[in-house]
Image (cartoon, rainbow, N blue to C red; front, side, top):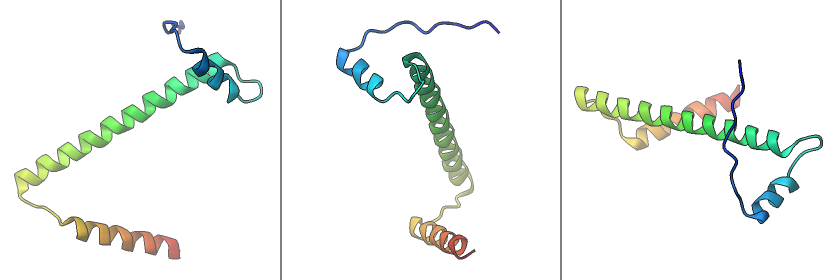
Length: 87
């Protein structure tokens, strides 16, 4: 697969310096930028999936008329967490 380029961007010297200051041994600024881009893409993908599931759940609740009280759901989640910590 051929590689593609990301458009070069101008940043404040302070931002560039901040990025360079957190580079790990042997890490280049380019690899840091690529890794940051990949992480942000994954974060946004997960966020979009989360929102889509929430909207689908809302639509299902509207269609079925089946709703749950937030307190009941939180209590059940607390119980599940407590049981998982015991094991």
